[in-house]
Image 1: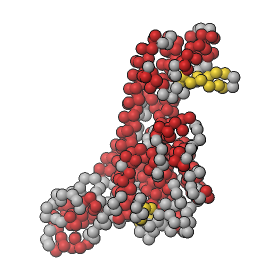
Image 2 (image 1 turned 180 degrees about the vertical axis):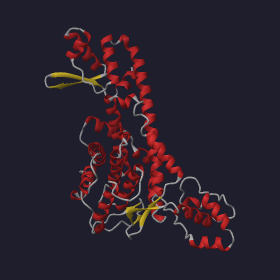
Image 3 (image 1 turned 45 degrees about the horizontal axis):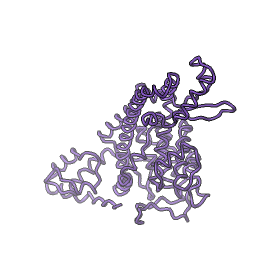
Image 4 (image 1 turned 120 degrees about the vertical axis):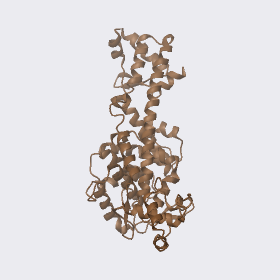
Length: 442
């Protein structure tokens, strides 16, 4: 990936403008920033809306306007210089839309409101996040194979599958600990979870990297993106991150979504572990969002969006690094990712709701294959996929004899619509994982 150009010094450009009598042009440019939050690497290629200015002078005006709203973070670089961030009007608008979008299906979406179908959506999201977060870190396997491994609970065959399974169990763990405060030990626990059985050094899980461990952030060609903070700073830096995550710092309001994004950035920047930093950073983002009450993020996968344009993700870090520690670049990128992830969930829910209705309509065409008792059970299973059925319950529901009820259920197993298992000595039946698809294929 190409390293972005370092922004030019603004001091000389501002001095030139002041001495040339073009200060008015400069003021106009300050008050009319370009859309988004472009870095110098983008600005230098854009047409200048103020023809009386050079690109360097236009950049100086943009930076002058930005500095008026930048606020320092308790995060510093390796030299003690603070990172900063700013919320432009457009970002406030995005945050408002995220707040609204993250609650859109609180009462109106039957699939999420229904406790049984809700679990299906949670599991689907956990699987997607586990797969795509691992693929961002180099896991090489197909989605179908990874999904089959998780759904059938089989053991992973290789390191890539192990990474994905680790991510899945970690995401489940986050749902359990979302009410807890962030601590060093909790972070170590999450790191052990995402890296279990995948590290070259088994003892590297759940501990800080040491000074003699050569850990770098570099591209596939070996170009180093930035120098990591020294190992002897990591314990203090992690405590500072926990204080930030728990709302102890700073002494001004930080929107919960922005706080979650900056925690993601913070751990990725500090890179406190030998490996697994990216996966742990994204796991902390989810912890923070759920901790702040954004319950819809049990169903949302940000890594799925990031994986579609991974270079933009890495550039957001580099833009911050090369432009005076301005973490706004990462905030802007992640707000866009979150919005797309929420939109993707809404689309997914609408699609699945439509598919459910279609499957129920198609089920009417099974009247030649299924009797009315079987049709009623399969229709119920479509809406309540986690329900367990027994011969006795089916017998009672339809007032039939035991053998007829037993034959109804076994025939549904033969048709591929139910699966059969045992609970003690009792036969139990459940809807097939792909029940709606099986109905459509007939």
